Length: 314
Image 1 (cartoon, helix red, strand yellow):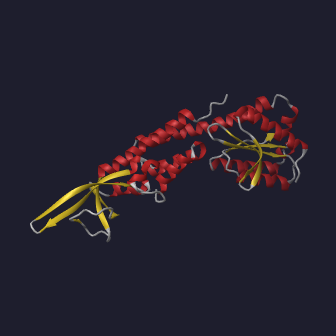
Image 2: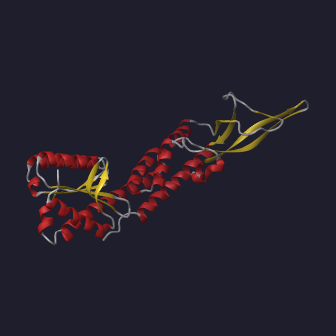
Image 3: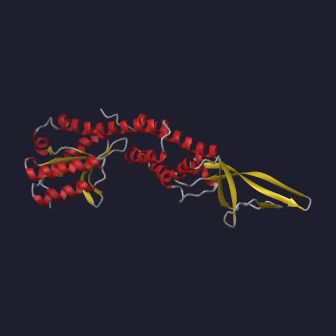
């Protein structure tokens, strides 16, 4: 269906305004298999879509509702023909979707009367601007509340897995790709990463665990055991590390790794591990230190969002 003259005019007005207020706005942006009328992104990576529903037919209304529903924009601004606002069926369907989007963590404006944008010269710069910036501010406030809650959980040494899951949700809104990858790895494990210590610059150093490897030297006249330092990158999800510490009373843990080196005159001290592996002893303190350093990094991540990434738009 071709766009009406009013639809095109509102789209250009909103695009120009968003460029002025937020710095970025693009018309007819492809998104999840559809084309958004206007897309904008704030400096702290809040994605905003604007959908204009002008032709008041049932087919057109529900088609555009599908576009809104499919979008992953954090804020969904909807401008409509005023006849749509007074249509009881359309209004009820819209309010149901609005509630559904809020439950999913998105913000969705009330239906905005597009006729006011077309006929009232002050409406765009005053009422419409205030509505949009207030919605952005509400997203920022919800982020601040979540940050406060997560910081408290970190300081109270509560389980890290749900904390990381919530941090990942925050990162999806205002984080970098690197942060999202890091939090995903912490939550689900670093199994796709290299575990070689020599390649650690790309990986968090707190995940390097230092243990000890015991080997036996023997000859006809003597027998001696020696301990060697052994560093490895722990790829397990945080949940597994926490579960081990919570459900085990031992102060030492045994991990089995493929034999890394040959020590002349030595044989490994085995306690029933798989063939071709060697046992590395790690203390509880070393494992707890790993998690404590992760807590500090999570706290720093939240601090950075709170201080540097929330909107400062006036």
